[in-house]
Image (cartoon, rainbow, N blue to C red; front, side):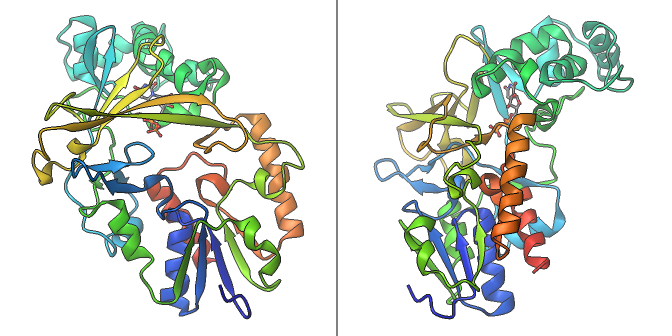
Length: 380
Ligand code: UDP
């Protein structure tokens, strides 16, 4: 690596770092080095083709691109052609399959009713014991209160309580209400998982997308290299875009940020189709995994993709230092600690900006991460 005179360094080749590097190279015309400690680019959206079956697998669980932000959609379409895939999710509860998010088919099958869309609001209001989203009696203090106000207690207990408890390893009453805002609740037969107008899968997988994003000759990607390996060689004047966890950057000087970890268990199955859909959630609290991914369904345009299938079960687990951090646990205590690390960064490292899901300690989707990166670049 040539450090002398280097003006821009990006740490982490995920979406946030990748977009900033691409903008620096294409718009400013400046050389930029991208360090990535893993052996691949793409962060947690990374996908690869399994050699045995030819199936496009997602290394860190299903990532479907979806956005309502026009500038993000236009930007990302320069680097990939997106298919018209629209994500649907099913959930299993006590041996039966239901639509997720909670929508009219979920409500009707769960209660054995045939409610019409205009009857749902009053029905849920009765189930919620009077707390309605239209007329909330005070702000919900936590995830449970918010969820019960949206769908009533029986649906909450069936589809949200156990799943959330498993995913986060804590009682939903100890989690911020905002987490559940990610899930729409619908009084109709629209069973799309996301409400965003633009959705799809990169036709050539995320590896193809990142190959195009980082193709510019002024971008130099160094795989298997972490910040600590090079920190003492980077010129003091270099602008650094850091997308790793800030507590690790500061050697945990103020304490450790809390994350939720994941374990993925992959199986090759001797069937063309095992679960009939890309993602099947597991709502029962006593089943230790939260969902099963069957990746071939993410690319229906590729046909049956052979006589076998790959299934991946996702097990949430406690995070310990050295594990892969997945979900930031955005409780007030962790936010306070992150605020202290941000202050430390601003005062001691004026040339450095932290961002992305890890560097920002934010539970962000891919499109919000791109938007964040575009804003950072615009502010340079
Ligand atoms: N959730 C749930 N039941 C489900 C799916 C999601 O209770 O079947 C809740 C859970 O609290 C989760 C949140 O909704 O943390 C957001 O889910 P999402 O699918 O957006 O999570 P991600 O795909 O980011 O893991």
